[in-house]
Image 1 (cartoon, rainbow, N blue to C red):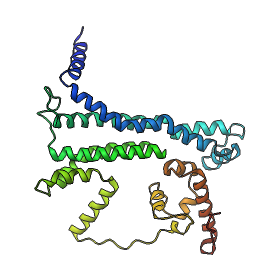
Image 2: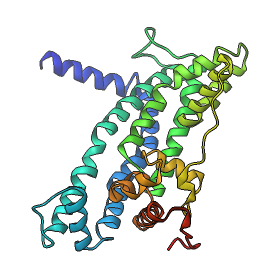
Image 3: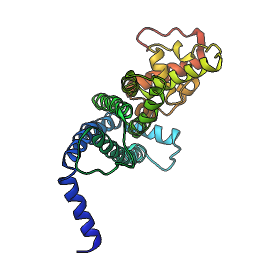
Image 4: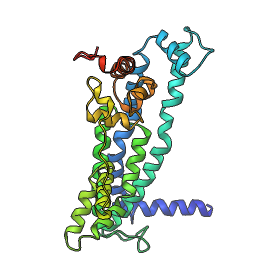
Length: 298
């Protein structure tokens, strides 16, 4: 038995005996967080793909690939096969690989740090080199609660992408720094609670709050923002404008000439909804304010 085999054996013995309670804690917290993501990758991804692939005709697939992606060599007979290959290339399950591996590493490290902070163990991996105080632990607990709830909600809505997984990892990684930063402002027993509460906020909300706080402290005033022209389209409200803006769709012209398949995948709107919005946008470009869109959007 060589050195590596002995080291591996000792590591497994340590995790199964001295570190047993912490190992169990890490397995439970990791499983709860990762289950919704794997549920979507295994089941939800296939449902979304079938909805798109079977939702348009072979003729439409041919027009889409030929005109939007300039695939001049395809024919209507090969359009369905080429579209399936194209979809898997751009939106296949393998795109989740790096983000899922990164999330697994992140949750294992964070789980072990938290376990060593709240449990009385006979052996440690991180202590005394690295340990978490109450404020840092509370911040991680709040972030874990938000990310897990977000993942469960996204799996239920079939609205998951690799960037969502990466955002979850980012939220967990920066939780300690955010919690300690805000906790340092409050010099009493409320520091841990504030850190936990802050961890439970979405990252976008925190960014807005930080910008507002910075503007207030620096005495900066932002100019008035104009009304987004997308609101002129039927069925578009502010929340939908914000969702489209996340995909860099901020004007009627961008919506009119966007890639409908890509926007369907990234926005999690149905293909019919996207086709309806694109049709309205095209009509608005050529008719503008003269267009009277009926209530049903057709």
